[in-house]
Image 1 (cartoon, one colour):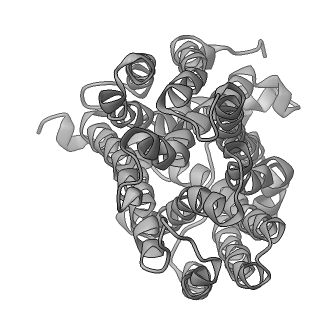
Image 2 (spheres, rainbow, N blue to C red):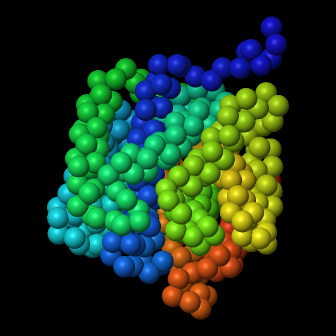
Length: 415
Protein backbone atom coordinates (compact mmCIF):
# COMPACT_ATOMS: atom_id res chain seq x y z
CA UNK A 1 0.00 0.00 0.00
CA UNK A 2 1.35 3.46 -0.93
CA UNK A 3 2.01 6.12 1.64
CA UNK A 4 -0.67 8.36 0.13
CA UNK A 5 -3.34 5.72 0.71
CA UNK A 6 -2.44 5.55 4.41
CA UNK A 7 -3.02 9.27 5.00
CA UNK A 8 -5.89 9.79 7.43
CA UNK A 9 -7.85 13.03 7.27
CA UNK A 10 -10.39 12.56 10.07
CA UNK A 11 -13.90 11.21 10.76
CA UNK A 12 -16.17 11.74 7.76
CA UNK A 13 -19.44 12.44 9.60
CA UNK A 14 -18.24 15.37 11.74
CA UNK A 15 -16.25 16.73 8.79
CA UNK A 16 -19.41 16.92 6.68
CA UNK A 17 -21.36 18.65 9.44
CA UNK A 18 -18.60 21.16 10.14
CA UNK A 19 -18.36 21.72 6.39
CA UNK A 20 -21.92 23.10 6.51
CA UNK A 21 -20.84 25.43 9.32
CA UNK A 22 -17.90 26.72 7.28
CA UNK A 23 -20.24 27.25 4.33
CA UNK A 24 -22.45 29.56 6.39
CA UNK A 25 -19.41 31.49 7.68
CA UNK A 26 -18.43 32.14 4.07
CA UNK A 27 -22.00 33.07 3.19
CA UNK A 28 -21.96 35.83 5.80
CA UNK A 29 -18.61 37.19 4.59
CA UNK A 30 -19.78 37.02 0.99
CA UNK A 31 -22.85 39.10 1.81
CA UNK A 32 -20.70 41.78 3.45
CA UNK A 33 -18.37 41.91 0.47
CA UNK A 34 -21.35 42.39 -1.83
CA UNK A 35 -22.87 45.09 0.39
CA UNK A 36 -19.70 47.22 0.40
CA UNK A 37 -20.23 48.77 -3.07
CA UNK A 38 -24.01 48.50 -2.79
CA UNK A 39 -24.28 50.54 0.39
CA UNK A 40 -21.83 53.12 -0.90
CA UNK A 41 -24.19 53.75 -3.79
CA UNK A 42 -27.29 53.85 -1.58
CA UNK A 43 -25.86 56.19 1.07
CA UNK A 44 -23.40 58.17 -1.09
CA UNK A 45 -20.43 57.06 0.99
CA UNK A 46 -16.76 57.68 0.35
CA UNK A 47 -14.51 54.70 -0.35
CA UNK A 48 -13.15 54.65 3.21
CA UNK A 49 -16.66 54.99 4.70
CA UNK A 50 -17.90 52.06 2.62
CA UNK A 51 -15.25 49.83 4.15
CA UNK A 52 -16.87 50.47 7.55
CA UNK A 53 -19.23 47.69 6.43
CA UNK A 54 -16.35 45.24 6.75
CA UNK A 55 -15.05 46.98 9.89
CA UNK A 56 -18.43 46.63 11.65
CA UNK A 57 -18.31 42.86 11.22
CA UNK A 58 -14.68 42.25 12.06
CA UNK A 59 -14.45 44.65 15.02
CA UNK A 60 -16.60 42.15 16.90
CA UNK A 61 -13.69 39.72 16.76
CA UNK A 62 -11.57 42.07 18.90
CA UNK A 63 -14.25 42.81 21.46
CA UNK A 64 -15.69 39.32 21.82
CA UNK A 65 -12.79 37.17 20.62
CA UNK A 66 -11.26 36.62 24.05
CA UNK A 67 -14.54 35.72 25.83
CA UNK A 68 -15.27 33.03 23.26
CA UNK A 69 -12.59 30.83 24.82
CA UNK A 70 -14.36 31.02 28.18
CA UNK A 71 -17.78 30.33 26.63
CA UNK A 72 -16.55 27.32 24.67
CA UNK A 73 -14.76 25.95 27.71
CA UNK A 74 -18.00 26.13 29.72
CA UNK A 75 -20.50 24.77 27.18
CA UNK A 76 -18.40 22.88 24.62
CA UNK A 77 -17.92 23.24 20.88
CA UNK A 78 -21.32 21.99 19.72
CA UNK A 79 -23.46 24.22 21.95
CA UNK A 80 -21.21 27.18 21.15
CA UNK A 81 -21.89 26.65 17.43
CA UNK A 82 -25.63 26.52 18.11
CA UNK A 83 -25.66 29.80 20.06
CA UNK A 84 -23.45 31.40 17.41
CA UNK A 85 -26.01 30.64 14.69
CA UNK A 86 -28.81 32.14 16.79
CA UNK A 87 -26.81 35.35 17.32
CA UNK A 88 -26.05 35.52 13.59
CA UNK A 89 -29.78 35.08 12.91
CA UNK A 90 -30.50 38.09 15.11
CA UNK A 91 -27.95 40.13 13.19
CA UNK A 92 -29.53 39.17 9.87
CA UNK A 93 -33.02 40.03 11.13
CA UNK A 94 -31.82 43.48 12.27
CA UNK A 95 -31.21 44.33 8.62
CA UNK A 96 -34.98 44.59 8.18
CA UNK A 97 -35.62 47.56 10.55
CA UNK A 98 -32.33 49.05 9.36
CA UNK A 99 -33.59 48.98 5.78
CA UNK A 100 -36.96 50.45 6.67
CA UNK A 101 -35.26 53.30 8.54
CA UNK A 102 -32.73 53.79 5.70
CA UNK A 103 -30.10 54.27 8.40
CA UNK A 104 -26.46 53.45 7.70
CA UNK A 105 -25.56 53.44 11.46
CA UNK A 106 -28.29 50.86 12.06
CA UNK A 107 -26.87 48.78 9.23
CA UNK A 108 -23.52 48.85 11.01
CA UNK A 109 -25.19 47.72 14.25
CA UNK A 110 -26.81 44.79 12.43
CA UNK A 111 -23.45 43.83 10.92
CA UNK A 112 -21.78 44.10 14.33
CA UNK A 113 -24.31 41.76 15.96
CA UNK A 114 -23.80 39.28 13.15
CA UNK A 115 -20.06 39.66 13.74
CA UNK A 116 -20.52 38.63 17.37
CA UNK A 117 -22.12 35.39 16.26
CA UNK A 118 -19.41 34.88 13.66
CA UNK A 119 -16.77 35.40 16.35
CA UNK A 120 -18.19 32.65 18.54
CA UNK A 121 -18.64 30.36 15.54
CA UNK A 122 -15.06 30.87 14.38
CA UNK A 123 -13.76 30.31 17.90
CA UNK A 124 -15.53 26.97 18.06
CA UNK A 125 -15.22 25.55 14.59
CA UNK A 126 -11.57 26.34 13.73
CA UNK A 127 -9.89 24.62 16.69
CA UNK A 128 -12.44 21.81 16.37
CA UNK A 129 -11.48 21.03 12.79
CA UNK A 130 -7.78 21.39 13.66
CA UNK A 131 -7.75 18.80 16.46
CA UNK A 132 -10.43 16.37 15.27
CA UNK A 133 -7.89 14.44 13.19
CA UNK A 134 -4.13 13.82 12.84
CA UNK A 135 -1.93 16.90 13.26
CA UNK A 136 -0.06 16.49 9.96
CA UNK A 137 -3.31 16.59 7.95
CA UNK A 138 -4.84 19.59 9.74
CA UNK A 139 -4.19 21.77 6.69
CA UNK A 140 -5.99 19.23 4.50
CA UNK A 141 -9.09 19.39 6.69
CA UNK A 142 -8.90 23.17 6.75
CA UNK A 143 -8.53 23.20 2.96
CA UNK A 144 -11.66 21.08 2.58
CA UNK A 145 -13.49 23.48 4.88
CA UNK A 146 -12.07 26.36 2.85
CA UNK A 147 -13.64 24.98 -0.30
CA UNK A 148 -17.04 24.98 1.41
CA UNK A 149 -16.40 28.46 2.81
CA UNK A 150 -15.39 30.04 -0.48
CA UNK A 151 -18.16 28.35 -2.44
CA UNK A 152 -20.47 30.36 -0.20
CA UNK A 153 -18.51 33.55 -0.99
CA UNK A 154 -19.54 33.04 -4.60
CA UNK A 155 -23.13 31.98 -3.89
CA UNK A 156 -23.89 34.81 -1.42
CA UNK A 157 -23.59 37.70 -3.89
CA UNK A 158 -25.50 35.70 -6.49
CA UNK A 159 -28.25 35.18 -3.94
CA UNK A 160 -28.42 38.89 -3.09
CA UNK A 161 -28.10 39.70 -6.79
CA UNK A 162 -31.59 38.22 -7.24
CA UNK A 163 -32.95 41.09 -5.15
CA UNK A 164 -30.48 43.97 -5.58
CA UNK A 165 -29.40 45.84 -8.70
CA UNK A 166 -25.89 47.20 -8.16
CA UNK A 167 -26.44 49.90 -10.75
CA UNK A 168 -29.38 51.32 -8.79
CA UNK A 169 -29.54 50.15 -5.20
CA UNK A 170 -32.81 50.28 -3.29
CA UNK A 171 -32.27 49.30 0.33
CA UNK A 172 -35.88 48.09 0.59
CA UNK A 173 -34.92 45.27 -1.75
CA UNK A 174 -32.73 43.58 0.87
CA UNK A 175 -35.59 42.95 3.32
CA UNK A 176 -36.84 39.67 1.84
CA UNK A 177 -33.42 38.00 1.40
CA UNK A 178 -32.48 38.75 4.99
CA UNK A 179 -35.75 37.28 6.26
CA UNK A 180 -34.82 34.13 4.38
CA UNK A 181 -31.26 34.05 5.71
CA UNK A 182 -32.52 34.61 9.28
CA UNK A 183 -34.67 31.50 9.00
CA UNK A 184 -31.78 29.48 7.59
CA UNK A 185 -29.54 30.49 10.50
CA UNK A 186 -32.15 29.43 13.08
CA UNK A 187 -32.63 26.05 11.39
CA UNK A 188 -28.87 25.48 11.28
CA UNK A 189 -28.54 26.32 14.98
CA UNK A 190 -31.11 23.66 15.84
CA UNK A 191 -29.46 21.21 13.43
CA UNK A 192 -26.00 21.65 14.99
CA UNK A 193 -27.41 21.12 18.49
CA UNK A 194 -28.80 17.69 17.56
CA UNK A 195 -25.97 16.75 15.18
CA UNK A 196 -23.66 13.88 16.19
CA UNK A 197 -20.59 16.05 16.82
CA UNK A 198 -18.26 14.51 19.42
CA UNK A 199 -16.57 16.83 21.88
CA UNK A 200 -12.81 16.72 21.28
CA UNK A 201 -9.74 17.94 23.14
CA UNK A 202 -6.24 18.76 22.01
CA UNK A 203 -3.32 16.71 23.31
CA UNK A 204 -2.60 17.80 26.87
CA UNK A 205 -5.73 19.95 27.05
CA UNK A 206 -7.26 17.83 29.78
CA UNK A 207 -5.49 18.93 32.94
CA UNK A 208 -6.48 15.66 34.65
CA UNK A 209 -4.72 13.64 31.95
CA UNK A 210 -1.51 12.16 33.39
CA UNK A 211 0.09 12.13 29.94
CA UNK A 212 -0.15 15.91 29.86
CA UNK A 213 2.45 16.26 32.60
CA UNK A 214 5.34 15.90 30.17
CA UNK A 215 3.83 18.13 27.47
CA UNK A 216 5.33 21.47 26.47
CA UNK A 217 2.30 23.36 27.79
CA UNK A 218 2.28 21.60 31.17
CA UNK A 219 5.06 23.84 32.52
CA UNK A 220 3.39 27.07 31.39
CA UNK A 221 1.19 29.27 33.56
CA UNK A 222 0.08 31.88 31.03
CA UNK A 223 -0.89 32.10 27.37
CA UNK A 224 1.72 34.87 27.04
CA UNK A 225 4.44 32.22 27.42
CA UNK A 226 3.75 30.92 23.91
CA UNK A 227 5.59 33.34 21.56
CA UNK A 228 4.86 31.20 18.51
CA UNK A 229 1.15 31.67 19.22
CA UNK A 230 1.49 35.44 19.62
CA UNK A 231 3.42 35.68 16.34
CA UNK A 232 0.76 33.46 14.79
CA UNK A 233 -1.95 35.85 15.97
CA UNK A 234 -0.27 38.80 14.24
CA UNK A 235 0.38 36.67 11.16
CA UNK A 236 -3.27 35.68 11.00
CA UNK A 237 -4.25 39.33 11.49
CA UNK A 238 -2.27 40.28 8.39
CA UNK A 239 -3.44 37.27 6.43
CA UNK A 240 -7.17 37.78 7.01
CA UNK A 241 -6.71 41.39 5.95
CA UNK A 242 -5.14 40.55 2.61
CA UNK A 243 -7.57 37.67 2.05
CA UNK A 244 -10.56 39.96 2.64
CA UNK A 245 -9.15 42.88 0.65
CA UNK A 246 -9.61 41.33 -2.83
CA UNK A 247 -13.22 40.40 -2.06
CA UNK A 248 -13.97 43.84 -0.61
CA UNK A 249 -12.26 45.79 -3.40
CA UNK A 250 -12.60 43.71 -6.56
CA UNK A 251 -15.90 45.22 -7.73
CA UNK A 252 -14.59 48.76 -7.22
CA UNK A 253 -11.38 47.87 -9.03
CA UNK A 254 -13.36 46.25 -11.85
CA UNK A 255 -15.52 49.34 -12.21
CA UNK A 256 -12.42 51.56 -12.38
CA UNK A 257 -10.86 49.21 -14.95
CA UNK A 258 -13.80 48.32 -17.19
CA UNK A 259 -16.34 51.06 -16.45
CA UNK A 260 -19.96 50.57 -15.39
CA UNK A 261 -20.35 47.22 -17.11
CA UNK A 262 -23.40 45.09 -16.27
CA UNK A 263 -23.22 42.30 -13.68
CA UNK A 264 -20.15 43.67 -11.91
CA UNK A 265 -20.86 41.30 -9.00
CA UNK A 266 -19.75 38.42 -11.21
CA UNK A 267 -16.16 39.63 -10.90
CA UNK A 268 -16.15 38.35 -7.32
CA UNK A 269 -15.80 34.90 -8.88
CA UNK A 270 -12.14 35.66 -9.59
CA UNK A 271 -11.41 35.74 -5.88
CA UNK A 272 -13.36 32.57 -5.18
CA UNK A 273 -11.83 30.72 -8.13
CA UNK A 274 -8.28 31.45 -6.99
CA UNK A 275 -8.98 30.41 -3.41
CA UNK A 276 -10.77 27.18 -4.31
CA UNK A 277 -8.02 26.20 -6.76
CA UNK A 278 -5.48 26.62 -3.97
CA UNK A 279 -7.57 24.60 -1.52
CA UNK A 280 -7.83 21.75 -4.02
CA UNK A 281 -4.05 21.87 -4.38
CA UNK A 282 -3.75 21.65 -0.59
CA UNK A 283 -6.04 18.63 -0.36
CA UNK A 284 -4.00 16.82 -3.00
CA UNK A 285 -0.47 17.89 -2.01
CA UNK A 286 -0.46 18.11 1.83
CA UNK A 287 1.22 16.15 3.33
CA UNK A 288 1.87 13.78 0.40
CA UNK A 289 4.24 16.06 -1.49
CA UNK A 290 4.75 19.12 0.72
CA UNK A 291 4.47 19.87 4.43
CA UNK A 292 2.16 22.51 5.88
CA UNK A 293 5.16 24.73 6.63
CA UNK A 294 6.70 24.51 3.16
CA UNK A 295 3.33 25.16 1.56
CA UNK A 296 3.01 28.34 3.61
CA UNK A 297 6.51 29.47 2.56
CA UNK A 298 5.82 28.87 -1.13
CA UNK A 299 2.46 30.60 -1.14
CA UNK A 300 3.79 33.62 0.80
CA UNK A 301 6.45 34.10 -1.89
CA UNK A 302 3.77 33.73 -4.55
CA UNK A 303 1.74 36.38 -2.72
CA UNK A 304 4.56 38.91 -2.93
CA UNK A 305 4.99 38.21 -6.64
CA UNK A 306 1.24 38.48 -7.30
CA UNK A 307 1.07 41.80 -5.45
CA UNK A 308 3.82 43.26 -7.60
CA UNK A 309 2.01 42.13 -10.74
CA UNK A 310 -1.17 43.75 -9.45
CA UNK A 311 0.67 47.02 -8.84
CA UNK A 312 2.78 47.27 -11.99
CA UNK A 313 0.91 45.56 -14.83
CA UNK A 314 -1.29 47.60 -17.20
CA UNK A 315 -4.84 47.96 -15.89
CA UNK A 316 -6.52 45.35 -18.08
CA UNK A 317 -3.96 42.74 -17.01
CA UNK A 318 -3.40 43.88 -13.44
CA UNK A 319 -7.02 43.10 -12.63
CA UNK A 320 -6.43 39.42 -13.30
CA UNK A 321 -3.47 39.40 -10.91
CA UNK A 322 -6.10 39.36 -8.15
CA UNK A 323 -6.77 35.78 -9.24
CA UNK A 324 -3.16 34.81 -8.49
CA UNK A 325 -3.17 36.74 -5.22
CA UNK A 326 -6.26 34.81 -4.13
CA UNK A 327 -4.60 31.54 -5.10
CA UNK A 328 -1.60 32.43 -2.93
CA UNK A 329 -3.94 33.25 -0.03
CA UNK A 330 -5.68 29.89 -0.13
CA UNK A 331 -3.31 27.73 1.92
CA UNK A 332 -2.35 30.38 4.45
CA UNK A 333 -5.30 30.02 6.80
CA UNK A 334 -5.09 26.18 6.79
CA UNK A 335 -1.33 26.33 7.51
CA UNK A 336 -1.18 29.19 10.03
CA UNK A 337 -3.77 27.75 12.41
CA UNK A 338 -2.08 24.40 13.15
CA UNK A 339 1.39 25.99 13.32
CA UNK A 340 0.21 28.66 15.76
CA UNK A 341 -1.77 26.21 17.93
CA UNK A 342 0.95 23.57 18.16
CA UNK A 343 1.71 22.37 21.71
CA UNK A 344 -0.81 24.67 23.43
CA UNK A 345 -2.22 21.78 25.47
CA UNK A 346 -4.50 23.07 28.25
CA UNK A 347 -4.33 26.55 26.68
CA UNK A 348 -5.86 25.38 23.38
CA UNK A 349 -9.25 27.08 23.78
CA UNK A 350 -7.65 30.29 25.07
CA UNK A 351 -5.16 30.25 22.20
CA UNK A 352 -7.98 29.74 19.72
CA UNK A 353 -9.78 32.79 21.12
CA UNK A 354 -6.62 34.86 20.57
CA UNK A 355 -6.46 33.67 16.96
CA UNK A 356 -10.12 34.53 16.49
CA UNK A 357 -9.40 38.09 17.67
CA UNK A 358 -6.81 38.30 14.87
CA UNK A 359 -9.61 38.03 12.32
CA UNK A 360 -10.14 41.76 12.89
CA UNK A 361 -7.40 42.15 10.29
CA UNK A 362 -10.21 41.64 7.80
CA UNK A 363 -11.51 45.04 8.87
CA UNK A 364 -8.27 46.92 9.41
CA UNK A 365 -6.36 46.15 6.21
CA UNK A 366 -9.28 46.92 3.82
CA UNK A 367 -9.99 50.10 5.81
CA UNK A 368 -6.35 51.17 5.42
CA UNK A 369 -6.63 50.37 1.73
CA UNK A 370 -9.78 52.47 1.33
CA UNK A 371 -8.23 55.36 3.27
CA UNK A 372 -5.17 55.31 0.99
CA UNK A 373 -7.38 55.37 -2.11
CA UNK A 374 -9.28 58.41 -0.81
CA UNK A 375 -6.07 60.15 0.21
CA UNK A 376 -4.28 59.85 -3.13
CA UNK A 377 -7.12 60.27 -5.62
CA UNK A 378 -7.19 63.61 -7.46
CA UNK A 379 -10.63 63.22 -9.03
CA UNK A 380 -14.08 62.66 -7.56
CA UNK A 381 -13.97 58.99 -8.54
CA UNK A 382 -10.87 56.87 -7.84
CA UNK A 383 -9.06 55.63 -10.94
CA UNK A 384 -7.13 52.42 -11.57
CA UNK A 385 -3.78 53.96 -10.63
CA UNK A 386 -5.14 54.92 -7.21
CA UNK A 387 -6.19 51.35 -6.49
CA UNK A 388 -2.91 49.93 -7.75
CA UNK A 389 -0.91 52.26 -5.49
CA UNK A 390 -3.05 51.30 -2.49
CA UNK A 391 -2.43 47.58 -3.14
CA UNK A 392 1.13 48.15 -1.88
CA UNK A 393 -0.35 47.46 1.56
CA UNK A 394 -0.30 43.75 0.66
CA UNK A 395 3.48 43.42 0.19
CA UNK A 396 4.69 43.85 3.83
CA UNK A 397 1.85 41.57 4.96
CA UNK A 398 3.07 38.74 2.75
CA UNK A 399 6.66 39.31 3.87
CA UNK A 400 5.75 38.90 7.54
CA UNK A 401 3.77 35.76 6.74
CA UNK A 402 6.89 34.47 5.02
CA UNK A 403 8.92 35.15 8.18
CA UNK A 404 6.42 33.25 10.33
CA UNK A 405 6.48 30.33 7.91
CA UNK A 406 10.27 30.11 7.89
CA UNK A 407 11.18 30.67 11.53
CA UNK A 408 8.51 32.51 13.54
CA UNK A 409 6.41 29.43 14.30
CA UNK A 410 9.49 27.61 15.67
CA UNK A 411 10.09 30.07 18.50
CA UNK A 412 9.67 28.48 21.91
CA UNK A 413 10.40 29.68 25.43
CA UNK A 414 12.48 27.61 27.81
CA UNK A 415 10.35 25.45 30.05
